[in-house]
Length: 187
Image (cartoon, rainbow, N blue to C red):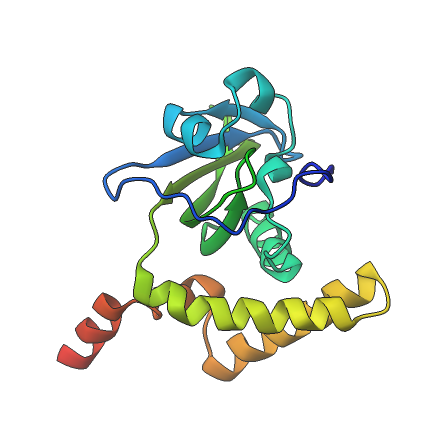
């Protein structure tokens, strides 16, 4: 797959969308965009024509660890859903964080025909915990001698963390929010 435009330089400026808004996209089995809602179009800065037919990773931010995407794709390809915090890159170079819910899409015969993602504005307290983890994963990726070693190193670190906690990635990210932690303490 093609990565985000190589000439696109992150500005370091963050864009936001409303807490009540949902970014929606659909892809085929290869991750090529087949649908983008108006919120996705607005926040990404691309037109619908620029998005449809392009790999979903057109919005991939270079500061997003590859290990998270590997885990995401491995999970949804098995038919399971996944929740993840993702850093995206707009066409203008600004970034935006999302809390993504990704699932497989099925036809009437039960065949997987693609993927569907709903993204909400992330919780700030959860992001404060995700950012250091992602920075550690990126550091491992950048220290590796080649892309395969980079992905292997960050994936191993992420899987080790999850195994130590006895959680799937979705459980891990839900455990980062203050609301979830407060509910657990109340029980």
